[in-house]
Length: 291
Image (cartoon, rainbow, N blue to C red; front, side, top):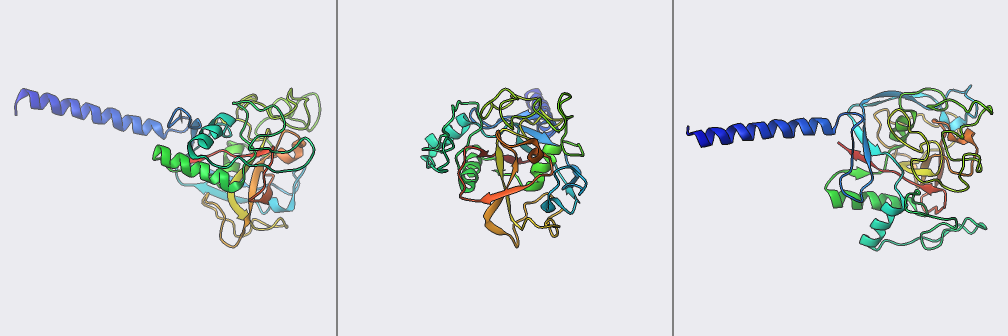
């Protein structure tokens, strides 16, 4: 074998090792990345298990948060560090000519041609879209990047929000006032410094490096409505997948809390739901990418 061919093979082997190492690093939990300039910034979450739902003695407990059950993720996945921002949403609108929605007739709460009534800047969370609009954004992102983007399942969302914690929140209550979390979330008036939605990342991240899981806006997830009665989780998947079968998919689950609601509705296990065609200045989403 000549020296040039040997050298080429050595270089190729070294290149392969570097690329293989890069691929390994790309799925290392805690690694963050962006697949394009206007794509959401993502972070890799580890494989593992958690207890989904809330115990009946937790303050604020609602019947649809039971029974608590173990959910196991067999492999890592990536989720948006922030909710999709107004800037990221606008890039999608511009490229696809997707509709700018109007809705909600409450005074001061209307969405008009895709924008809320309050001041709305590029780094605020995107709002004023239906569930199917959010789903179409994820499909567009998948097509644009060639990567498997989608909306999160409800269990993925709660796993991300808990970030290894138990109890109502992954952070302590404010020292000054009982059941308050204004130092960690935008909600319940302007005591946290914001009258409306805050720019994403305005509050400390959780242990997974995720922001605004407990305030600012509610977020669409894939799961269909299965009732809000006691033991509503009976039959739910235990593998982290979305719960679709047997549900009313004209209504979808939403998670988190928004800038105007009290902290009792921001608990990690708290659930809510809305018709899939709901449009609001309080409702957006974040994306997941399979690895």
